[in-house]
Image (cartoon, rainbow, N blue to C red; front, side):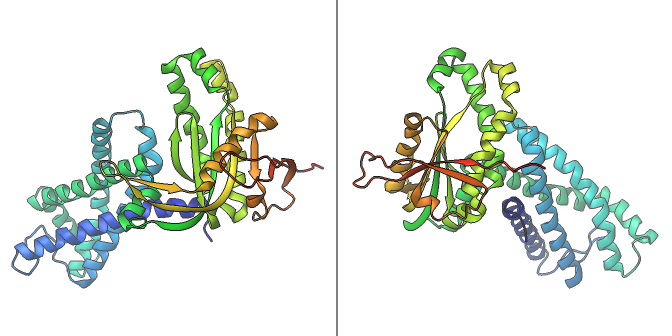
Amino acid sequence: MLSVTQRRRFLRILPFGGIWLACSVIFLLIEWITAGGRFPETDTAIVPDARILVFALAAMTVLGLLVGYVELYFLNRRFSRLPFLRKALYKLIVYLLFIHVVVLITFPVAAAMEQNTSVWDPAVWSKLGRYQVSFTHLSTALQLSVAIGLSIVYAQVSELIGHTTLLSYLAGTYHRPIQEERIFLFLDMRSSTTITERLGHARYFDLLRDYYADLSAAIDRYGGEIYQYVGDEVIVSWSRPDGLRNNHCLRCFFDMQRALRQRADRYEAKFGLAPEFKAGLHYGPVTAGEVGVIKKHITYTGDILNATARIQLLCNTYQVDLLVSFVLLEKLPLGEQYSLRHVGTPPLRGRSEPLRLYTVSEELPVSG
């Protein structure tokens, strides 16, 4: 069984394999059609039979998955502060150098399969040498550049609007409004107005960028989806099964809290303060669908969003960092890891019925 993080990573890189597979099929079809219903036969090209086609398509799919992994978890972070065009250019150079090495490995294997000989046969390496200085090599490089370019664009769009949102757009999941049950976490930085006045807008923006980056690992680890950034507020959402599984929505909150506390010294050194946050957690039905004409957005509507926002605001009233509705708590498999304290059943503006609210804390393991 894959962990949530592993499954999430696999699902994020899977479209890259699809992009590379689709590009390979399209380029092969173009070559086959332009050559009159057959593959061109030259002394540098490999004429594919069924075995070679399967090998080539499988190799390109695996290469696409590898590019996706490198893109999302290495290069995207390495070049995160660069403008898009410079970032894309640097990535293209890195990928082309890397793929050139991959071609040096895979071409001899395919040539050996074509000639029914060993990969160490001098004829195989002679063909590789001719291929390196041929128009076939140039054509392959251009085809790979297209696949790389599409991968980079997909990664950037995915980063901009969110992986899950992008896939939902492509699949048309929310083209028509649907009803679903979701968990929402509204998280707000404490004393943000005071911090803005103290730092100024430019340095406050730098603080927000670091703050969001430090929170993101926990959100990704526990399968959360960032619904919106609203100033210094983050709205995280889970589908009902994902948020309830192993208390993911609660564990996400405490992991984010730990992440900021562990980096408190770094924030103090850089900004002269360490940010803290308060949060509200609630669960219920929403209507989800695409809205907008000039700019599309997947939006959720329902009483739960207003209620969660008001629950989060009550953290100051009860002087706690986290408030959770009993509606959600009774569905979570809490066990002995958490302790609960009932803080009240306040009326919430806009709701006819009050909500029972609890603050939750982690029980530290007893040593010895």
